[in-house]
Amino acid sequence: MPSRFQSYKSFFKQLTLAVVLLTTLPILMGAKKEYTVPVEGLDSALRKPHRIPIKRMFPDKPKFATLKKSPDRTYTMDRPKPLKRQTWWTIPKELKNKAFACQFNKQHVIVVDKEKGGALVAQWMIDQLNEREARNLPTTFGLATGSSPIPVYENLVKAFREQKFKTDNLSTINLDEYIGLEPGDSNSYKQFMRQHLIADLELTDDQFHIFDSQAQSENDPEIQRLQKLLTQNPRHFQLLGIGENGHIGFNEPDDTLSAETPTRIVKLTESTRKANAPYFGGDTTKVPTHARTLGPKDILHAERIVVLAWGEKKKAAIANSILGPIKPQVPASLLQKHLNVVWVMDAEAAATLFKQGGRVTREMARQFPTLFQTPEK
Ligand code: GLP
Image 1 (cartoon, rainbow, N blue to C red):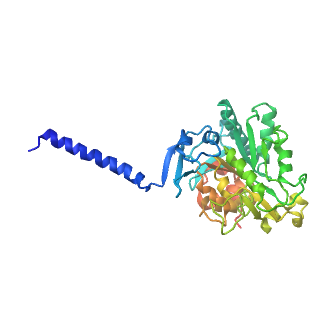
Image 2 (tube, rainbow, N blue to C red):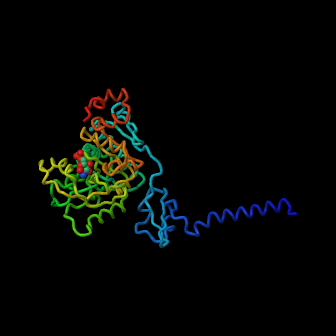
Image 3 (cartoon, protein in one colour):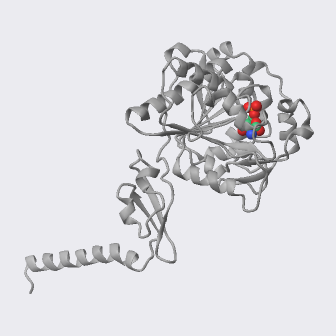
């Protein structure tokens, strides 16, 4: 009869064998197709060398990445996603009762008037830039055009003149640009950005990136050029406006649109051309028919996103985007897939959202009467 000690010994032997088999077999058989691994040391873990060193792609992010095994037994890597929702934004004490933060459908919404909202968002951007600067890290902002970001840009320019931040380690990438305008055309988004921000922040051509407005050519090298810049400069912050039809950038409502849609050339809808006609002397025919735009896939890769919406015209798009469902006919609803979006809007833009989905506190009603009064169409 085996002694008690011997039977313990053989039991542990069998247990060890089972554990070893269970952990190594799936790997040996290639059953495991995805690995979540720390980004640190990833270069050596990848069998094929990456074109951009991992450290440069994520200088300050020792988080996790997903490796996918392909049939040729090499690995490709997804960008690491933030693991949880963060509340990186703050509302300073002086805005108490003037800016209200609430949540709809797990999305952060801040109701504030346009002037104070511009200052608030500019401050978040400056804080992020300074915080990274203190750690000697470069920062990339994704920027938007249109009337919505103007109050933010005004505040950034003011703060730069007051030496509240430096731009030596800042680069910017714009969302979109019309196709078919002369390089110096005052209606191009390049000129818009120079006029409202870039010149005042003293950013050089190496720091300010935007699609060219030249006409499209075969294989469009312009899309490839920007795509490369996006990979080399992961955006830490993305500013967005929203179209009356719910578009972001120039991603128009379209049955084929998804969170995976890439950066590409698009045809503009009549409603967008009409909405943008005031910049072209009110003549819709002068608004280009096509544009280049970051696709939802690239937009969603930014670390933090802020969407700005001012005025009644945006109230339907805002309610549909935040309350959902997520659908290609409402492009901004795709932002629900991102964990760190903050929607900043005035009471006029928030009117339908609050009527359909929320509670207006007495304090909010006193500060923002339009949350009650705006007649619904
Ligand atoms: C344009 C831009 C968008 C912008 C939208 C809203 O179509 N391509 O990026 O968000 O206009 O413009 P506005 O802020 O003037 O309402």
